[in-house]
Length: 434
Ligand code: TTP
Ligand code: MG
Ligand code: MG
Image (cartoon, rainbow, N blue to C red; front, top):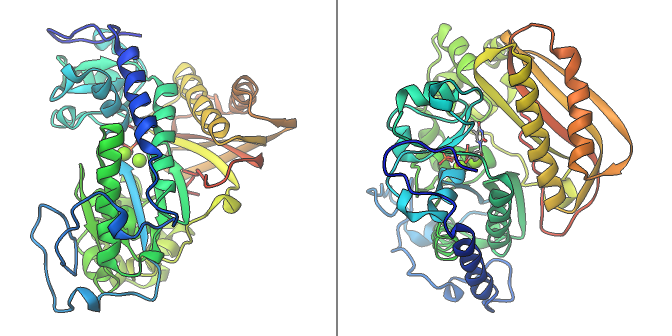
């Protein structure tokens, strides 16, 4: 499995698996200790030191807190409290856990760089590698230019899926409703916590439990709605904890660049900038019609969010309608081998998530976005329900063929729908944004 570069990089194969399985065995032994009969744990049941009473705003363990008056007990909410948990540099962190000698080094997980001549892209990289400008979706050859001494590792998706399951199992113990939205992130409805300080304490406990049981760190956002919680989890990565109380939402969002809104990429951001809209506050100040004229239908959601309306529900399993995954190329490409290879990876990824959740599908959809947000989808209904990765991959590949026409592609996605089966506590896994 090894293509890695750089001096003094030890062989990855030595005893990694035995170490890994030992770690998993330890996790399994400790995970199911009896802690509480309730889903949302009473704070007293959690093995952590509760954070001091600190009511408001962007609460983290390492940044100053802005206390704007309301005391701890004044910050209860009758409304929803949503938590978004996202693992830090997920694939790379798992690789570092497998081989602790990689800690502190620029670790890049993705395609083989082949000494700078490799095709394909970076899946993710450690925060050390990010300092060199490397990031997800970047061509691996570009990453190699920026960081030739980095440690390059192939994607070991089955391992990451197993670790993801461990994490989702931990999260499931802490919320009545959990919605997994990708391999490393989930929304939790923690309204039962009753107040934002209590939800913050719960978030700290979850972070600690994940760290103790998996050796990995995550970042958590707590807010009255899903979109703000997601923006908050990204606010102080890695290992962050950011709480945005209901009366803080507008103030929190206003200074952030529009690209922080989930679903707004570089191009949409650029388009908004051309009309003088740089921040989420700028969006809020404009008429909704202006934003919709720029962004089309998604502009409605963007404008509502900018005005603090963030009312999407955390979808429990009953809301699981599709499993999907998509990726945006850093540089548009018409290269059939890159497109077919990427699509196959996406198909494998969704098939694995489907199988991990005990689901089967009957509809496979491929989504292709050309330059300029010109988006197309093609679907195929299979003769019977399946979770067979080979069947899913072949169906997706066949659907892609008409799109391999020499036109530059910006984004590829695969979605599996018409689902049946599934286990309890698992949830919608859907990264399709449109
Ligand atoms: P992310 O949560 O987007 O990224 P991350 O966990 O690596 O880093 P961060 O600390 O910023 O959250 O994605 C989760 C995993 O999904 C990531 O580790 C690798 C995979 N992934 C890809 O394979 N391709 C991609 O383009 C992206 C964005 C992620
Ligand atoms: Mg992540
Ligand atoms: Mg993520």
